[in-house]
Image 1 (cartoon, one colour):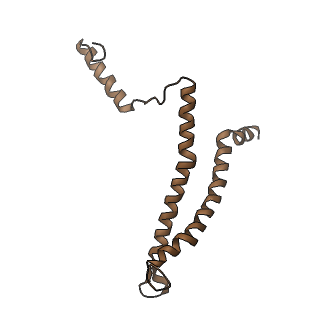
Image 2 (cartoon, rainbow, N blue to C red; image 1 turned 120 degrees about the horizontal axis):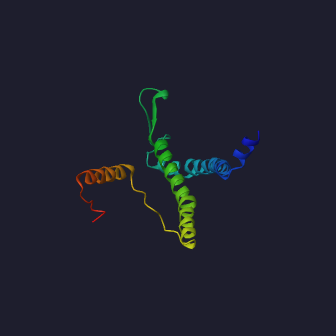
Image 3 (cartoon, rainbow, N blue to C red; image 1 turned 120 degrees about the vertical axis):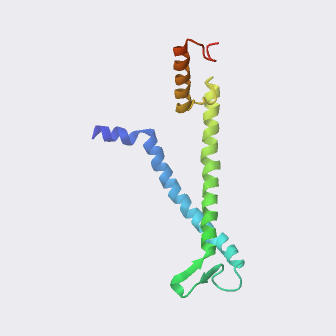
Length: 137
């Protein structure tokens, strides 16, 4: 039970829980915005019928609603933009500022594993031939 308590009290788990709760509330807000503001505007372009951009192929069960698809795309784009500009961008900026304040390099680019392996192979082959590598000359 002690291990579970330590796990739950870690910052990452609490941050994740807060993010899920805020995300759920934000989803409801965006859904209301799209359903009550964006969808009616999209339906205006659908013509004089009540369905807006929807059409029926044979009967009511084969209704294709293009307006609902456009609304979902718009809701996704709004959500992604808000998450990026409200959460991701400020946190990244704060992390960069913190690294600068501590005198650490901005971001260290890690050499991909395949490049490291190829470099080791090159060095081993050069050592077998008794030559020098470009890094050693």
